[in-house]
Amino acid sequence: EVQLVESGGGLVQPGRSLRLSCTASGFTFGDYAMSWVRQAPGKGLEWVGFIRSKAYGGTTEYAASVKGRFTISRDDSKSIAYLQMNSLKTEDTAVYYCTRDRLITMVRGVTNFYYYYMDVWGKGTTVTVSS
Amino acid sequence: EIVLTQSPATLSLSPGERATLSCGASQSVSSSYLAWYQQKPGLAPRLLIYDASSRATGIPDRFSGSGSGTDFTLTISRLEPEDFAVYYCQQYGSSPRTFGQGTKVEIK
Image 1 (spheres, rainbow over the protein chains, first blue to last red):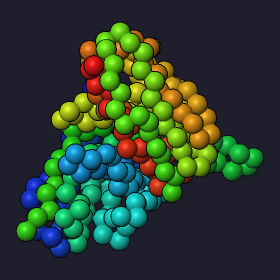
Image 2 (image 1 turned 120 degrees about the vertical axis):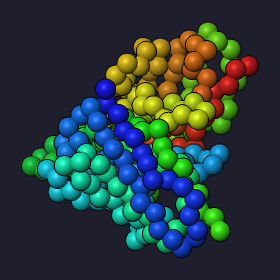
Image 3 (image 1 turned 30 degrees about the vertical axis):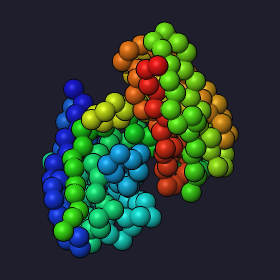
Image 4 (image 1 turned 60 degrees about the vertical axis):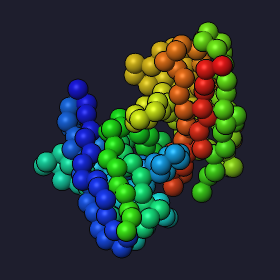
């Protein structure tokens, strides 16, 4: 069974740091890109960022709201993706979901373009930023 | 950034009725790279539709997606009791990926 389990959430003061983990099972973790999505209390979904698989460079992209403060990394030997959150703000309070990304390759001429959609979601972990 | 606007915000229907949810994009979504997710209270979202019209694994055929460019639709042909939930559209054709604000389908 494909499964994603987030951990590491909790109560943290503004300005402090927190690291979330996403442990995967049931699939070859290293073959997939992974994303983080968050949901503030009573609000909609916000994509936070993602990390490509090593085969596609292992590079990352982030939403403007977290760029420079959050870092996504991965340990393929442990099947874990991480979200390092620094300089936390009260508006970062949310449930944080980890997702598996499915790759679509579009060929246009001689160039490949890559797109990702989120097909498997974890149950989420709650982060509360408050003094 | 592509802004997605979903309508209506709330849809009040009875079981057995047809639900039509709309998602409009502020600019054309590349290659119809649009997904729909269902979320029930206290649970994680679940992928229903990707590439605007492809059903995800295990999704009943009463769920269908259509559209291209800037206008997309999720249709639930006959509402079952378990379909009352919030539905989000999301585009992945350009970065950053963005979500609509959601449509709540509630029991009338």
